[in-house]
Image (cartoon, rainbow, N blue to C red; front, side, top):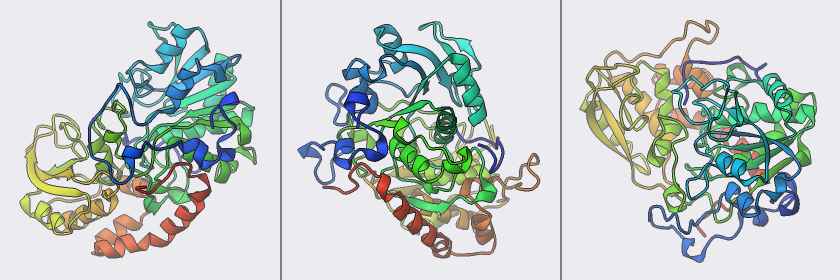
Length: 452
């Protein structure tokens, strides 16, 4: 999902209608719904039951009412292959076939609406053969671009439904943010169809700083925000959007179709929902759990596992061997087990070269995975043990040449690793800003976070 493309800095930029009011006004109980009694405590990883999902997504609730909340509106949908119902039908196909939605446009993000493009690419603008709806290329679009696309498509209600993975540098949430800014400044309605956060409800990691805001971190949130896209949209509208809009907010024009049955400690594999890869290099929920931390290795010359079957779980380089994996395992990474391995990427960094390294195996998906602390240990030990370890530099941005700074939000991580700081010293450095963010987000959390 994240690529070497950084598109600018700070200047870049319940239920609906009868089903409920704006997201910020809907009480937590109404948004969260009731968790089945069998989910009290830590649930087992039972796999997917597509007949009776334990979690009902926003789009399922909308479709169950025959899309009545969109009646009489000219609608544009921002989505990708993850915008499916529990039976795997895509919502755009269902909307178009139903005749209940005046569907004027689909706006395709990175990788495209149907998912035909790799990282850092899109499908372009075209007419979708299956539905006859025009698909507009919205990858890299800023707020002004979205406003122009809304006008061109004659859209008055914008629907957002994309499966997030819970990491600040996953660009779909910034597509949502820019689309929200455009809606706020043009008086349009913005509807978020909520889905689970596969890494859970806990916030972790460092804060983005204004100096390093880009399309892989376009506002001041921590690296693992611990919110669903619906919660995050309400947070962005309530706390940060006015910086881009000159004071305008969506307010009650932001509406969230909430899930039923989700809580922050429920593993995605126990939701009963199918996992559709939101991008080519997040093929499984285990990859999503590791990605929140190991994406930092995009900012090094080591392979982050692109070109393998387990990207972001498998990391290494020709200069690494079993000693690196052994050192990382010594930190006893919670929720993860470490295995030394060899692999040969088929594309991206070190393509065709044998790499030594490690693979992370998820052992506790309920909430015990702390991929950011684990990735910190991986960087500290790679700097000490891996021959040829170096940071990736990007010539296109001479003022901010290190990609890891854009991913981590500042120069601090890189500088502390280079200075020989310990894992504890590094993670302690962001503890204060993390605590402040966690307090700031509390009014926008609409689903339970505990085990019971």
